[in-house]
Amino acid sequence: MSQTEAWTVGRLLKWTTDYLKEHHADSPRLDAEILLAEAMDCQRIELYTAFETVPDQRPRAAFRQLVSRRAEGTPVAYLVGRREFYSMSFRVTPDVLIPRPETEFLVVALLDLVKERTAGTAVTICDVGCGSGIVAVCAAKHLSAARVTALDISPAALAVAADNARQHGVADRIEFVQSDLLTGLPDGQCFDFIASNPPYVSEPEFESLPRDVRDYEPRLALVGGPRGIEVTEKLVAEAASRLRPGGHLLVEINPALHEATTALLAADATLELGPTVKDLAQLPRVVQARKT
Image 1 (cartoon, one colour):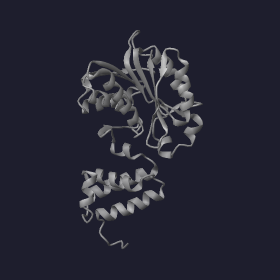
Image 2: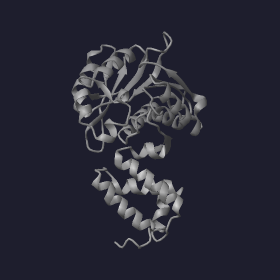
Image 3: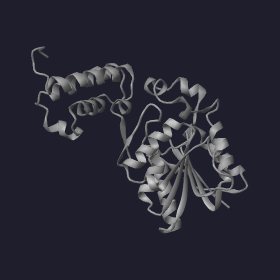
Image 4: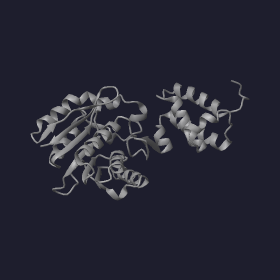
């Protein structure tokens, strides 16, 4: 391509896609579109009707900086400061995990159980390890009668989650509490539903994660211990005593730890193991149990 040819939107996207592919980005074309839309302060879909447009120098300079940082490994969500989850936009920072599509299965399972059981009556929900607040905010947004408690050990993560709650108009129905799992709650406080996406990556697995995950996302929110299941073990033990009779525990899991996790739930005499929810790849993704 001639160096004198104009840097149109189409040319910028083509060049950047090839460049990011060379730097091992998992989704180079999508990354290029998101970053160019950010630099041009427009919606990504608007790029498709602007392929022949030549952006001004300022957005092109901003785009170059974003692309350079992406090529170095910085995740796109941290570069633009947000990520879509369950058809909602959530603010994200390096203090929180970037929301993944797999966690939508946790949200759907929670919403289905609540609606099936309560039929619109008041219900209490606890999101353990809330991170950016996606589970807590989605629950409050879609369950008008729900009161939600969101827990996280990180004050910085709680600040991001609280900001997302305000953004989506549900801050008045979510209480944010700094807590290591459930230990920071008052004695005797119990819930109808406890949901969690706990750290479940083993220490050996962590070393083999993609660079943009390993080097940029918070290790505390990823690694569950030497075997990956240590945090879940503590969670199950604590949650069993924090559920009301008939209440439900839902936990997102590492599919490789499905057997070990269901064994944990089955070993607790106060919990009745429920069906496992599988993701689109038919991998076990969410385990659940009911307090007897």
